[in-house]
Structures are given as structure tokens and as C-alpha cells.
Amino acid sequence: MFMKRMYLSLTLLSLVIFSFIYFYPCFADEWIVEVVSVETGVIESGIWVWRDCFRRSETISFKVTVINRAAVSKDVKITVTVCDRIDRPMGYYDEEVNLPPGTSNIFYLPISIPNWVAGGEAVVRVNALEVIGGMPFPPCCPETSARLVIYYDMRDIALVAKAYGSYPDHPNWDEAGDVNEDGKVDIRDLAIVVKQWE
Ligand SMILES: [Ca+2]
Image 1: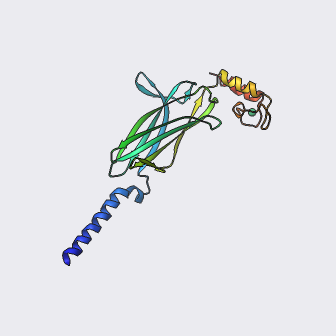
Image 2: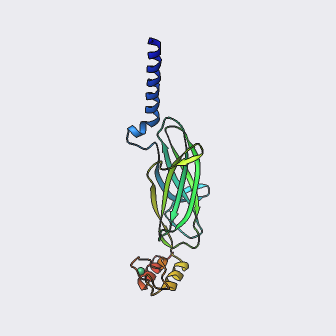
Image 3: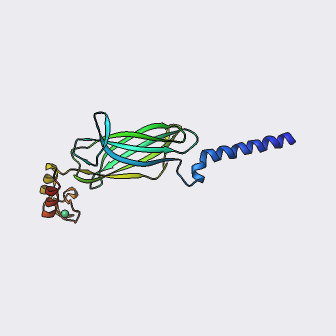
């Protein structure tokens, strides 16, 4: 009887210790796996260089720092989504990685900028999904984001010109031409494109 109680007590104690180690970050009010930062840049001569302004057709290299605070290694799917000025998804990349326990890891993830995007401010959103049994389980942590700029060029002039004089419901309306987002495409939009031309 005594041995049985001892055995049960030890099993229970082991379970408590394991749970504490495994889920400790939860108790500590921290995420087990978290994308702590995302930075924008390019690879130049094999070296990552920070930059936040890009031209169409360039490949952006996103420097993503992910931390695993658990006491065990984690399989994680890192997802990167970039949206242009009018929130159209213009690029997606994901990669499955194994994170050793208690480590901070840096990944350089590439996305090429398509030619059809709207110039101006874009946003990149990064998340990490824990992979269990080959299946990604969201959410793993809150989304992390960063801003970047797509230089205006001839394509933006064309977008403004094509939608010039339009407004929502107008047959020529194109949100991409409304650079200052005031609900009409006019000389002000053209002025912004010309002023910030690169
Ligand atoms: Ca406008």
C-alpha cells in the first residue's frame, strides 16, 4: 500500500515538474515561441544589410528573430506576408524550422517584389506557428510587423493617369491611384508621386 502511494505520488510529482518545465513561459506570462522582431533589408555580397526602401522587382530579405523559451525543441512554421499600400498581398513566404530549447534564432527570408504592386508604404507581417505532428497550429504568438516603402516610378504615374478624375463608383476608379487616400484621384496624388520619385 505504501509503495503504491509512493509510486502515485512520484508519478504526480513528475507530471507537475514536466508541465511546469514545458509550459513555464505561460506561467511567466510570456509566449513559448515568439517572433520578437522583423527587419527589412537586402543581401549584398553575401551579407545582410538593413534597408527600408525598395524598387519593384527587387528581392527583400526579411531578418526575422524568433525565440523559443521552452525547455524542449520546437518545430515551427514561420510565415511572412507582405501587403502593398492598398493592402493587397504581394508576397508570401514560409519556412519550417526546428528551434533548439531556450534559444533565439535569426532567419533571413526572401520575397521578390512583383511589378504590379502599388508604390508607397507597404507592410510585412510575420508569425510563427507551432508544428505538431506535421500540422501547423495557430496561433503561436502575436503577429509582428514592420513598414517598408516601395519607390514610386513610371507605373505609379500610369496608375494615377488612368484613374485621373475618378472617385469610388466612378468607372475609372482605381484605389491604387488614390495615393493620398482622400477618395479622389487628382493633381495631389500626381504631386506626391512626382515628389517622392526615385
Ligand atoms: Ca487622392
